[in-house]
Length: 187
Image 1 (cartoon, rainbow, N blue to C red):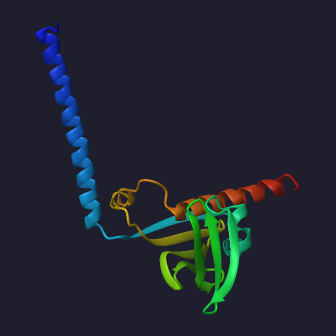
Image 2: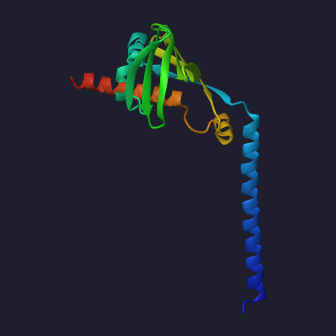
Image 3: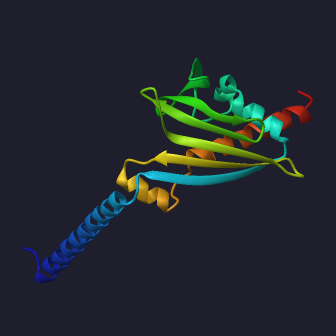
């Protein structure tokens, strides 16, 4: 038979678990409600500095066939027929495949890429600005995207997780550093 002290301890533990469960459920519900009030469109700006001239960065960004060799989110790129006179390609990666077009191009200073869905322009859209500096090139990427999941909307507003544009700049930096090491090694 259980003593009354043990019964009280068990009852207290059950109350604590119930409070924790209700607290987590409330937090989850509040997060969803907050996310539903936030706009689905999200903008993020990321910046990177590279010790290469703008022309070299531009060549990397516009070498669509070479993207799978340095972008961590792309495993295959397939060139497609131009859409309305714009260069178009399919990117295949972990998240499936997407069709992207080169919406605007001002070599080597500005480029806009945008996804296409059902033959029309869609989000995400990335605007690249390349500015020559004394040390090389400053790159700014403005990414506009649509976030359907309300929890993800809240997390994006809080800055949780790296944006795809930030990952792209990290991949670009890694690729340029690999090329520098090869040159230093004489390869």
